[in-house]
Length: 222
View 1 (cartoon, rainbow, N blue to C red):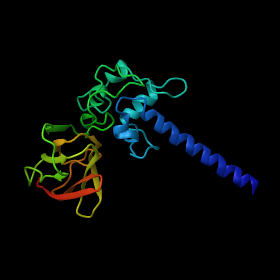
View 2 (view 1 turned 30 degrees about the vertical axis):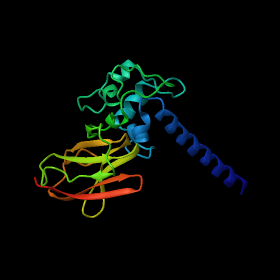
View 3 (view 1 turned 90 degrees about the horizontal axis):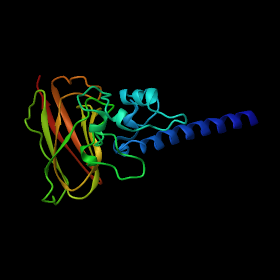
View 4 (view 1 turned 180 degrees about the horizontal axis):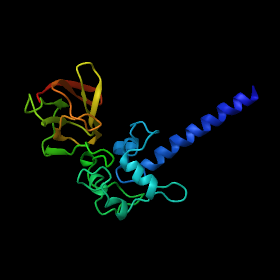
């Protein structure tokens, strides 16, 4: 019995240490809290296989005790091969950010250096504050292969924009970040989270923010 209790205790300690390791590394890259564990892991909750950015960090940019060595060298690389460097995607193109200072750039413009499908968000209007959260119908609709999705944010909030199929299965998280009040638009390229093209059909884009949730149908015609 004592051996079993000791084993359970050790397992809990190991799991706690793994969770701590994931969380503290999030704060060792600029704007790391935007995508959190999804930056370095295939599983957005952390653990398991690393993303391409995670592999890059693990194999060449950790110190002797496992801290991330963020700087010009890591910032200059393009882990996911999407044409933007790690630094550009994290709003620190020169790799000058250090722990303890404010995150650079705007969180709403951060993209995931470990995901080539991660999407830039365009700010349409920051001067006029919207009255309510809104999800606009995508345009064009039907579309092939890309379409723009507009949304409005009345107060500073964490906003997620996701795509489901007709069976309610989550196919893609387009954005999941904190936004200031304003009108925004994002381009959806008709691909799932793995970068694979979706087949023709009806899909649903959903905006999630605070207590607001709204979905819109999108028709993809290949």
